Image (tube, rainbow, N blue to C red):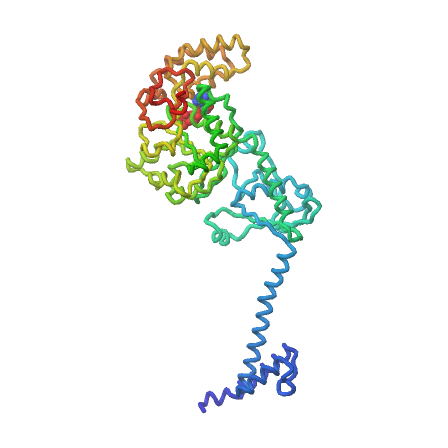
Length: 513
Ligand SMILES: Nc1ncnc2c1ncn2[C@@H]1O[C@H](COP(=O)(O)OP(=O)(O)OP(=O)(O)O)[C@@H](O)[C@H]1O
């Protein structure tokens, strides 16, 4: 025998005997040497004896068996408790990166518990991850205040039912693992006794309804954040269509075209057509393109999802994901669609979206059905015909500088309190001093803003203002008289009084009759 072996053997035997003792005491079993066969320790010992295993190995075997049983109980005990918990408790989880989180915060704010809770947090916004909603609440003199249950555990009642919620902020490394956002994500879990999800469904629907009521008279604008996810950025009061001064016919056509589209899902499905509609609003800067889109969204009750192609973090992949992540009913807006690609050809690429990436995003397989796409540009001539071909863009609307009729209407809308007869006279005098198509509506609006309380001064000062500004930089003449290539889609002009006749090939086929 090796001398080291000789040294350790008696100690190993001692350890083995101790192990036997321990295993017996854990298993509350008698000595395996006695009537051991009736106990687990004895049973293991018997098996070990029959296998001709020594005393030391028997002790180890017993420890292993008992350790295994304990580990099993621990593991399966956890499963068992979890199983029982799932059978008697329903839980809904809300993540601050999702819109539903805002619904729950809003619901909590309105729940009487929040008014009584001794531990509460105060917030001026109800939004995902504590993100501020620009514009929201800022139109009042003081921002709103929301009282919410503080982080931790809370018990409250909902429709005579006990519910409990846990509001927590996971550690920052956990957040980074869950998603790409570094924003301090929060989680809320709401639980109640029972096996039916019905009570929590009911709570979620009611929270959603209450939240959406807040936005009913508003148009919510979402924009892509740097992580490639939609973020709610604005909630604006709906802009009435009546405030957009363009040809009433065009306005009406646009609105009814979009409404008809939203009601025609079956028509598209039966014919296997992609259920999408695209509008291109093009023309002079400050002529009302963006305003018209906001107004249209309000009229249709849709939210606006804005894609800014100059967003540096946008790639073909993120763009595709963003477009496919829009809700099925929404207005997708790509503003100044020409700018990204023009800049690229000049070597000043501001985003990594490629032209084909853009095309794929707007009508690829993943592109959301049911959405209305609106694009705006001041330079239609710079657009690749592929981008605005029928199917991608179904209707094009030209926005030009103000006609005299538009100037007169703008004046009347600007001073709504002037009695009718005077208003007619003053607006006529005002507009007759303004040459047709020389000034943008935004430019004229700027002038009126300078005289917002003095319509008489606005009328008397306009001639001088026109002379001063007639050759100023702001009056871009751009392409208003350039021929527009006919892409076969519907063409409309936003001018109140058409100052130049439409060429026959620009009249939409469906509207010729
Ligand atoms: N046709 C119009 N009717 C009423 N207001 C208008 C009209 N056109 C412009 N405005 C006013 O001018 C401002 C700028 O308008 P808007 O942003 O809609 O123009 P735009 O054509 O989208 O300009 P850009 O091409 O520079 O983005 C807004 O405050 C808007 O109220």
